[in-house]
Image 1: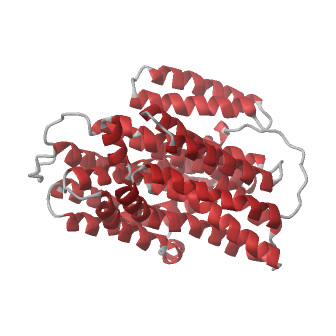
Image 2: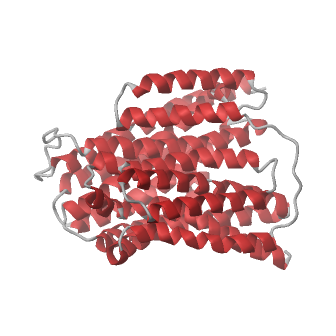
Length: 450
């Protein structure tokens, strides 16, 4: 491999790291931001859900643009947008400036993983692409592992604005991209701008229906129907509705949505619980979450091998049961020693990783070759939408006075106990979706059998 391309992959690893860090480190800063602007948990959830929603939409948009326009320019545009959002965040004087800054950051950060994957396919020989994609993905897992630790300590020592400041280091990538990215030309192609716009409005009003008022759900439905109509009339639609006629794939999409909804909601609630209930500071809260996150970051290889050996359906079933047990345990021990929480997080993070690998593997196998690119792109979009909706829902759950739901809990902090009990019940729907997917997949194989 040429020296230039080695430096390029190192550059993309460094830049992609900021997308993952920004999702995982800000949760530790939310309690301090909430105190600064006197927010309840529902309002504070916008800080995470706004970023995640715009990251998902940006990722699929930049992935499509990368088939047409030079990847160097797209990555540089992404860095520029992320930098603009970071500067707004540093200078924010009110809560809504923080939310807008996070949304702009998400719009920039979404470019990094998707365009990096296209770079790996464009510039490197086929026999090296698997290795290079693995290197890029390791940046995401590294950020997932160290994000809570970095976010907790930086917030505790320097305040929440430093979390925005950290992203300014992404500008280091600008001269490196200019120097090491091979020359490219613009290709012919078409972007479904109308479909992208309708997708943004559908997702945004869906989020508003959770965050503010259910009446926004009507607008989400209207724009969703318009998006479906646009999908049928466009030659290359932004969001391919017809692919959901494939039952195994559509069940995989529901599983991805629900697994990520529950996982990110749990790690939105956890720092708030550790700080407000257990009395820890941000640094200690990050340290409690850190070991489980790091363990999952380095477990990808064994998890992949186990999925190949035992099959995705079995892996999903057991991983989901473990996630449900973990949520029930945390619901029960709220207010007790945080050692129980740290112990539970080990199992939740690894089970979440197993579900991600197994569901993605099953989804890719359920698609025809010409559908894989579009199908996996939409799966990633639903992953981010699930994360955004999860933080929105459970930000609101924490504000409700529901009494004690878990008879095993003796904690007076009912909102946190109830939140994890609800997560434990919700995650079990993944087993139902998995069973439907497996049954439909078996019928499809029998129909296609010679």
